[in-house]
Image (cartoon, rainbow, N blue to C red; front, side, top):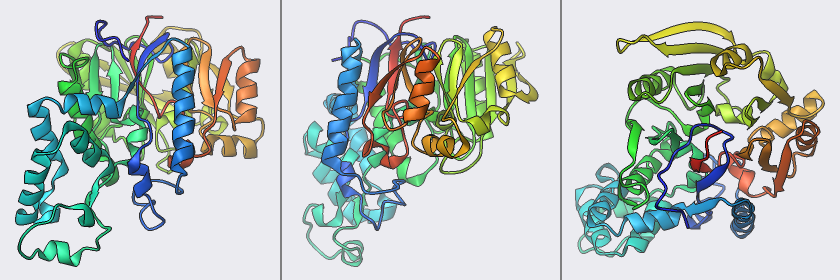
Length: 403
């Protein structure tokens, strides 16, 4: 249970982690089939019971290190107990364009009377046409859809809580998610941050309906210094919009916009690089010399000045005001590096400076981290990784101690 007396705040990637938002895999993963898994952004059909066991073990590792864990499903149910949130949740679930006016009205009427737990389940796991409440009269929409087609889409990617929101200082940025399968996650996070007691008074750092940006591309290199990956999921317009927002709020002085390859393997910046210490990153070797960065800083009159591009490691060290950023490579040879990058070897979650959680299967990357003085807490991820995400992807830090 999260401490509701201490306000959320995150100023870095590696400050001692005190509170985190996770999502335990649920019935939304049981909606995945070979027919829809590509559309829903999964590379295979996960064994849900095993995924839940793996996630429970992940959460226990965090609790064992003194981290308060808030589960997204619990937070959503709590938020929906507010009548205003419940009404907003019904609105988010029902799509008139998909269902047509009559069927949409019937579903809205039904959902308005369900419990907060029942509505939360629909928002997360979706609803098929077969599961819709019975209605009088004919419905062409209902008749022309297969009973197992989705009237309300499931959200299996809720597992990756880093993408849908990110805390920057004492403000939360709710992401504008790019892929159609994930866009409704924004509404779910909006409800939690607006109506859960822990977050009710939290200020926002970014408009959720602004240009596309995802939390997996946002890295807090140091207090006031952000790196934002620009690639498959985050656009240049999204990076610039977030930069302008954090500059206007006075919570950052430098933003590095980092172009990354637009591919499934490198969908976010944190698939090629994550911080493991205050001055160290684990990085995919092929990105080490190729990553560049544009440096954005405020002009003082509401504008933004852009410099670069320059090598990412050089620009990052300069912005962080350190001599250099230590780099620990993924794997020992090109083949191993590529395999372990695909298996999220770079996607670590720091619990404190020099202490990270990583998937146990990335043996060589973990050995290199330990050889560099980084403590690795290994977790299983054979099923959790089927959506292409590691420990960082599966966690949204809510509170970290200052470095």
